[in-house]
Length: 375
Ligand code: HEM
Image (cartoon, rainbow, N blue to C red; front, side, top):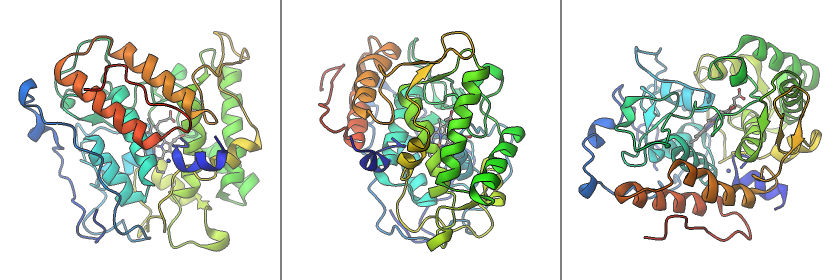
């Protein structure tokens, strides 16, 4: 698949629009309505929310979505985008949401491109959400997602290392070294340093290319368990592009477009907060530029084999340039390992969510697979 298309499809994989029309969530989240999940009457997972009708720039740091500090029990995790949306009430402020909530919120608050939003939300939900209650944590495991399905399903939230969350993040340390979900000041200092050296004080695709490569090298040299395979290979490049695409104020055009200033970066990464008066991007966007970031220093998927500096290329799980292999591996190995023998509503909802993922990802020349049948 051409890298150009890839930027659109992925994460590096890729409504209403009036200011007042988007709901502001309170702190209880969506569980209450879905709490009493009774197998026979359990509602079908809803179809993906439609793309918004207005997709231009607009003020999203608005009076209906005030930033609020965390309350006791509120959950946050490794994604600065979802953290920010929760802290402004575009997502339930407690950090527990349905995939539909997430798709609506990332489209509304960040103008994230629809297919990319769906790929991200459904893959995260399939990996670490509760498929019966239709709820997912944007951080760690919580009882707020409802009763767990049988092990080996984890339902551990997007913070769970090794499924969606992975190594070589720009502002989070590798799980091998400690809490991989929280903002890390030395890594942010490095982000600033690279932006100064390669971007004249701004983060852009050029900086992304250098920093992404450097973070991978740092992990190869220090983390014996370092891994960047399959989905993580794809998201690592995609997220490096998001920073230049989605965190830059939508009123910036020309030479200012795709250039992120450091105060704004800190606001998102550390404070989980829109810069004051922030406008979302002027058109739907996601992983555009991931191809540029990759091309600066192409690194194939792979991992260390238990010792530092032992990196071995491993393309068996796909990656940025091979979404079909990622899809096949995800559907035929990763998900069945979590759900080897699902029954009832769980099986039904697995089938439905895998269908949503395939429709959004549309991997070229890659037939849909049905590990649990079709109905
Ligand atoms: C449903 C949508 C989304 C899901 C499920 C999701 C999930 C995640 C996860 C699990 C990570 C951790 C990956 C890692 O190990 O570094 C992550 C990181 C990241 N996400 Fe999101 N995300 C979503 C939307 C967004 C949006 C709208 C943005 C806006 C810019 C964003 C920006 C980022 C960035 C920049 C990182 C990397 C942080 C770092 O490297 O320090 N994400 N996301």
